Image (cartoon, rainbow, N blue to C red; front, side, top):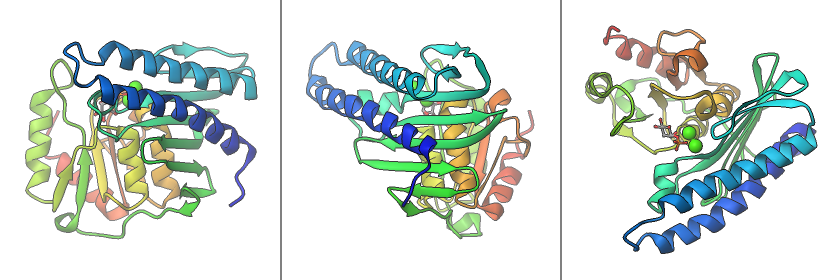
Length: 264
Ligand code: IPD
Ligand code: CA
Ligand code: CA
């Protein structure tokens, strides 16, 4: 499969950062047994991966702006282009030696996401999408699952925890969704959740309180695989209100309806 120049840049960057994360992940698995645990080590791994991504992308496309989880906003001379990057999505999994984590890189042009790469180095799964060009995993074209009924569906979500998110709201959503579906999964990497929806592994996904870097590449992935993504009101303000609902057309609609049972 021929990849465009921009996807190539993003893939090379994600793979390079991925090699760094994979090395550190191996080390984390060794550190698991120590009392202090690998916490500081993981923050370093995260920052190291972000540094690699920042250097590689700045070199390949000088002047583009950045929105990165650790660095925040880095303005560039070119205000038409912005990289949106999570160098390690699934930190809690990484810290606990669970091989479900990813690097997420999206490119926004004039406010529109035009390219996305999500890479899980532990499983060597590389997801790519370009606007109008389809979505792929390791060169295999992706298509969202065809299931139309919630009762057949496996739905991914995020569950807030100590110090994070609105626990009461999440419990209401879970109660509303769990009674209607075949299964709920909490993978621990929102970027991979969306990639899994694109790949048809999960039928849908919803979460609140996400940041743009958690979902930018994944939104494009889902759409390029023929799916739908919106905020929980059905609008396109995902980056502003931090909510997302995704799936095939029918599943997206049904999930929105189910989630709307919670007002406020
Ligand atoms: C987290 C993951 C997780 C989601 C959290 C995010 P991080 O990102 O995407 O699945 O539930 O809301 O913050 O902290 O591992 O980069
Ligand atoms: Ca994240
Ligand atoms: Ca992160």
